[in-house]
Length: 124
Image (cartoon, rainbow, N blue to C red; front, side, top):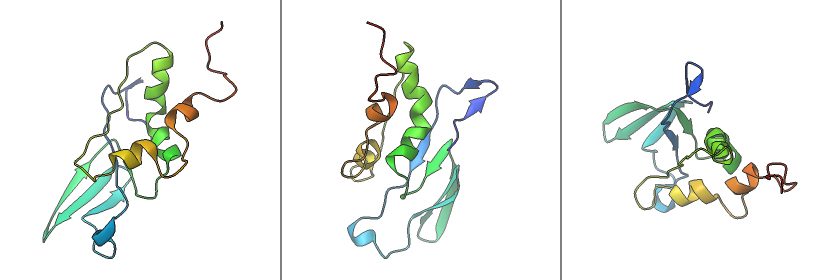
């Protein structure tokens, strides 16, 4: 998802939703959340549904690089001396850890932000 921009500035608050993969008994059932496009989800409960819009929507197949692409500008501002927060919110089992850490040995955000060659390091 592209960063949300207002005029020439980044918006102060952005909401990016990542749909987690189905777990256990959810596999094989009709999903409660359907991605309509890169900014829209359709949430279904029983016979009713609700459409919700966000600054970005990532599917269950999104990898850590996809998640990081959404927050790269915010994370890199910290290196420029600005305060920033990346907040994962949701009930137990909703996918917070999966979003922040990935699966297995997925590269962390710190590894993507700070290259091994030290190119972002402050001069000593």
